Length: 237
Ligand SMILES: *[C@@H]1O[C@H](CO)[C@@H](O)[C@H](O)[C@H]1NC(C)=O
Ligand SMILES: *[C@@H]1O[C@H](CO)[C@@H](O)[C@H](O)[C@H]1NC(C)=O
Ligand SMILES: *[C@@H]1O[C@H](CO)[C@@H](O)[C@H](O)[C@H]1NC(C)=O
Image (cartoon, rainbow, N blue to C red; front, top):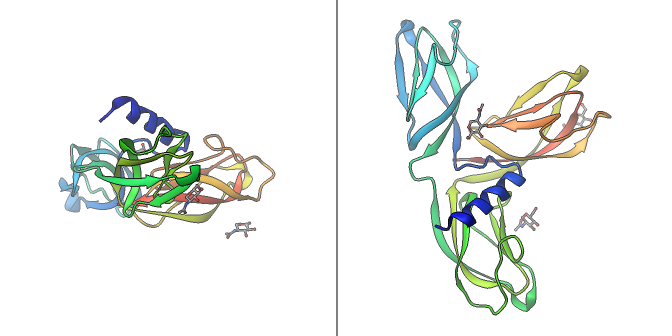
């Protein structure tokens, strides 16, 4: 794999405010009954990246490092902590690759859907057929929003395309910072958001990505009076 291309692709992902890595997230319940230590191994995980409380069921506190935590692919709870946790992890087989021919005839834009691709991580030219050059982001590229790869300006080639398997969805969600307070909304399913933009703003206060709105894992947040319908894209393993 060409490191330079991978870095370029990662920066492309960063530019679209994607979670830049190949992690997947899910909600997992882990319970310490009778105040005893308990653990659960995350299926398919190489190692866990982080773990946050989504829905605490116990009266006993859930405190990271004290009554819950993780090591490699294993989650643990202790001292009576029982909760649903949002867990992001690197999967054992993070990616699947396939060679796909995509062709721009008559120098026209063309695209192709890659079934089952949740998040593209690498797209390289395997075998170019056109005289026209194939340059990432200029004459070929991909959209994570709809699992689509594209070519343009006469680029025709077999591409080696690698991606995280899963399903992507886009939905519209209303999130409001009333009285200029910080507020959050959690997507119901076990999912990881990689794209969020304003669909329809309701507030006079500005909605600026990273400043007055944003997302972490499966949670959207707003602050400083930003109220809007947001278009949110996320993937589910
Ligand atoms: C995929 O999304 C891109 C960017 O929003 C859009 O230009 C393109 O037409 C979409 N393609 C399909 C097949 O939905
Ligand atoms: C979001 O909330 C605003 C104000 O409460 C409302 O005007 C708007 O229609 C809502 N949008 C949706 C999609 O529910
Ligand atoms: C958890 O890790 C994922 C993947 O690295 C990242 O996108 C997310 O922001 C992290 N969440 C928290 C709460 O640190």
